[in-house]
Structure formats: structure tokens, C-alpha cells
Length: 343
Ligand SMILES: [Zn+2]
Ligand SMILES: [Zn+2]
Image 1 (cartoon, rainbow, N blue to C red):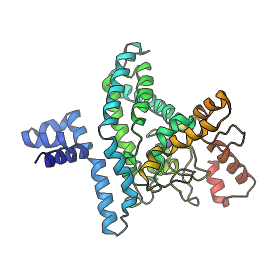
Image 2: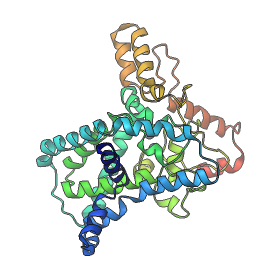
Image 3: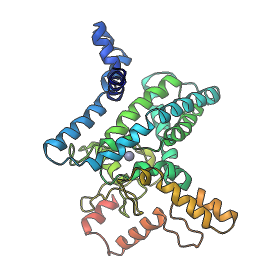
Image 4: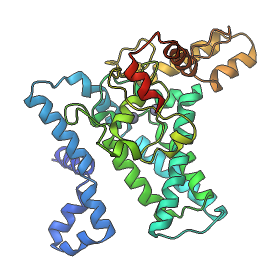
């Protein structure tokens, strides 16, 4: 019986419906009007959407187990370790940095806007480093390995990525004065939206979300971020407000004539948990071992993926710039794409 109890508790926790069930049990429905109550209603939306996505795929006979298998295995593997480490990392940063905040903020709508802009900056820093520093890419690459897009991809993360992300994001936010309740509220919105932007084509074929595509980061932008196409590589690092992508020139809209190819550029067995989870670490260790001299060995760890001690670099930046140059010379893409890119 214990086994079923554990399974039941896990299902409730995954679906995020614990608090809502508690409210139904007590009959105190007015609690739905409190902030916690509203959050308890929002929490189950993403897990439920994932279930709908799977059911739709099954009904329309498009369900392929391999598209969900690896994210599911990673979710199970991370279930305790990653969450525990992440909570510990956030608590540690709060203890360390809260008192050094450069300003004092309160839980008000205008500080929420300030907090969210700061959070997005912190998110940009963590995410950018996750792509541009090879060691951090080892933590982030599991999330980019899936060669399909669906909501389960939002669960595919190396177990050390969440604590790494949270240390950077929490520290920057606290130092820039975002107070703790505000930070947790922003984390909640960010987590919910961060899951939604992985919605698959089974549910949302065109993920531009109409006019919103101009003002916020939509699932369409995040599909571009997950692409290995030369044009799309290492773009759209933000999560909800994509101001920092505009500021740092990493914004890239989806082009109608450049279909997204999901995954990473190296040959990978995306059906292998070991390759998805540890593959990049293995390649980094191999490169470090064969690099001559201590300086080159260190460079492999801190330089972007694709950097080579021989000078034959194949970084995303070089590949993308080469591609853009070809467009300029009219060798790639049809004119409409060029026009769209100018915008
Ligand atoms: Zn990424
Ligand atoms: Zn993603």
C-alpha cells in the first residue's frame, strides 16, 4: 500500500494540485481569492497541459514514446536531488546577499515591474553563460538535446543546472534589491511561463501568439532558441520579457521559410539517457585530456563550445556570422526572409 501512497503523493506533487485539494477538503473556497489561492489554481495548468498534449498525440496517433522518454527519465532522476540542491542554493544566497541589496523594494506592482526586469537580466546572464562557457554548457546541454519540442522538454535538465541557475539569478536579484517575497512570486511566474514556452506543435502549431510576438518572448521565440539551424543558434536567451535580447542583439524571430530543426549540432543519440545527460561532459573531458599545456586545457573549460586549441573554431557565433554574411551576399534564403531579418 505504501507504494501506491508514494505514487499518489508523487502524482499530486507533479500536478501541483496539493493546495487546491486541501481547499476542497476544508471547503474554505474564499482562500482562492488570496495570492496563495490564485497560485494554487495556476500551478496545475502546465502539468495538465502536458497531459492534454500527450492525450492529443495519442488520439491523433502522433504519440511517439521516444519524444517523451528521455525528459521523463531525467525528471525522475532529478526529482529529489535537483530540487533539494536548488532550495538549498536559494536559501544560501538569501542568507548571504539579502542584506547587501542596493535598494529596498516592497511587494507592489511597480516594484514587481522593476523586479521582473532585474530577474530577466539575471536569467539572461545565467542562460548566456550556459551557452558560452563550455563547463556551464555541460550543465545546460541536456535541455537542448531533445530533437522534438513538447512540454516534457521543460523537465529535461541536468541535475546541477537548477542550483547553478538559481545561485546566479538569486544573487543578482538580491544584490539589486529585489526582496524575497517578490523574488519568489517572480520565480513562480517565470517557472510557469518557462514551462509554457515549450508547448509542442501538437497543441500550438503557430506559436507566435499573434501581436504578443512583438512584445514578449513567445513559444515561437523559444523554439528558435532550441534550434540548431545556423540562423537560430544562440539567440533568444530571455524567458518572458525579451528586452535583454534586444539590448544585447541576441533577438531572433522565427522565419517562416526556415523550419526549426531541434537539437544540438553534434551527432547525438537523443534516445540515450547517458548521451543526453553526460555526453557533453565526456566530450569536454576528452578535449581537456588531449589539449597541449595547462592554458589550453583551461581554455576548453571556459571558452564557448566549438573553441579549439588548433584555431579551427566552430563556435555558434562564428557559424551564425558566416551564415549571415552569406545572406548578405544573397547566397542563402529567399528575399522575404532577408526582409524579415532586417526588421
Ligand atoms: Zn538554452
Ligand atoms: Zn527550453
